[in-house]
Image (cartoon, rainbow, N blue to C red; front, side):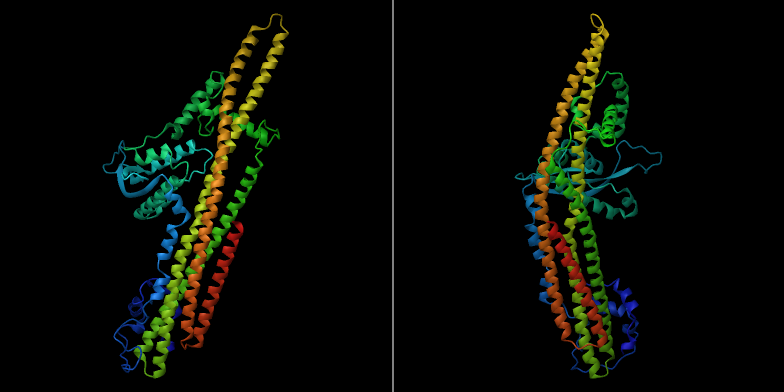
Length: 551
């Protein structure tokens, strides 16, 4: 009888279409794919009435018990998530409700096409929000370009802050993935992005976010985000700057980074200052002397490497748990087929006893597969904190880049002041050698002094901006340390709890398996499963230890 069972490869192929959610599905699946269990199989003698499996039910796997349902119940997960640090931060934000829903396809307003019906279109989303303490809900239509505009405005207004990064455009994925799936993923990503902005202590109360969530109509594209306009303006100003008509940048331009083409002469000057400092070995007039910041910056770089390594380990762990669940599901399917075959073809009492034992093994394997899948779902849920903090590192790098850019601007202005002062001294020395003075040189000295005063004003504005960015970096690093400790402590608690619950459930299934009398071949197979489980537990403990050490 045992030699008539289907090969292992066929069982693995059948498992790809097997839903493990309901235990009663195994009988129909087995009879569909196994030719030995189909209706065309030869009739077998009926089993005696005393057989344990001679009942009207077509299920060859015991239904889940209350303990199984309680083990996989989402109540504990929801209870823990309601008291998570992220939920606590959302409870203190300015907004009590933010949702992105109802994606619609719209045509470009000013789009013209030679072919009727082929005008360019875009997807717009309904953004609904409500402020805390206000029962009114504001609903506005926003497209992805509006989210890009919001991100650019926040980057300019909150330099030095760890501004949450916006979702990428993903042009390639939009062409490869199905349209509905891509739109659903983007909608969820945009909603998470708005919640992260609302949870930020500085951005959550900003006018930029409030206007985005509540202002009716389409958002205008600001001039600062139009790259072509910036480049044209910079190219038009360059001749006047070289002729001395606009020698110094206005203070409102100094507080913004030079990149983007607003001021080409300033870009060239800062590039020269950077090359002189880095390659020439010349000490700039102002350097970064905050040792505490430099130490934290180095720690953040080390932390990013640890996050990357831990993320790879987490992916390996999830893959191992998924493989274990698939293997146990395939094993359960094989024993379901064996149970049905032994039941229908049973001629002797030993075959019926073996069918009872096979049913117990099949039930245990199906429950173990379900346990592995539930455990994998919980593992992905908790270990997603790693990917979130990897995304935060992009914001950290941007904030540190703002600080370095502001420092370079101050260094460039101080170098310009030193150069202007040196030119004045040379002109005054040359003018003193002429009797009565050289009026041309004196007039040039007067112009240079005016330039120095304007440069001094710009330097003071740039220095204040640099100090403001330094203070923002200090506040954000302190906040990130606190939130990182809370998030990872919550992650480890949930991860260890889910592993403990799964290990207890697997142990109970192991005890049920030991109560059944099965063949030597099945014992070797289960020993391999236990070894895989021990390896997964070992990887899990190593993973937990690594993160505890890095806290």
